Length: 265
Image 1: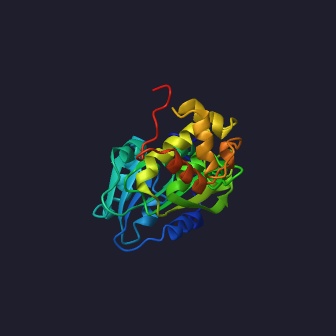
Image 2: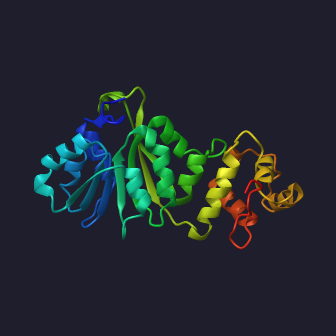
Image 3: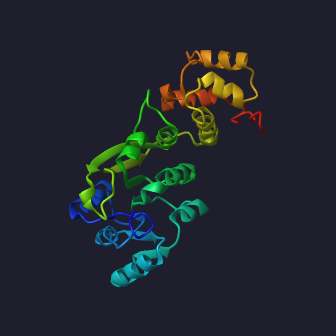
């Protein structure tokens, strides 16, 4: 882990240029950068005709960045604080893009927050642990909760795999640049979908029938009948279900767009 909150700073300029190129910047874009660090990415972003909000939790790094970017102050806003809390308050007004070389331990939490925003970023480019990037792009039979949540609203793509020597200090694992492109999704079922995904993947080794029957007020017989409409037997595991099938399951199990209360509630 690095000195600053687990950050590993990009030192390879060609990687920085790669990140910016896949962000597909256009004049007037609103961009939020998470984990600005020493400004390796920030200062290159500012060479483009965009409005940038750079978030850095570490006070020392935030002050350093303010000094480095003084001449760009009209198009740059530096926020010293927690990016997760900043985003949780509410999504930015209008269209926006998200980018960051983030501390790897916040990846899952960050994507869950973004997934729940009413206004999601058009494009998200993150540098994350390679293993986590592979989880995000997973498909059946390796589907997982993070993939199911993220792929509901975005098409994920691994842009490049990065060796540790691209960073200072070098992490102990390989990293990856992942691109999430916003896609059309049914906002009406979003909350219900996330509830179903949580129920199914809370105990991924159990069958989908057991998971659903232990959490919902439906009887096993009722659930079996609903699963049969999707050609499911109930013996499948959560990791066997595609995002499209999970959406259909959400619709089948919903009553007036509301998932039934769980037995524990």
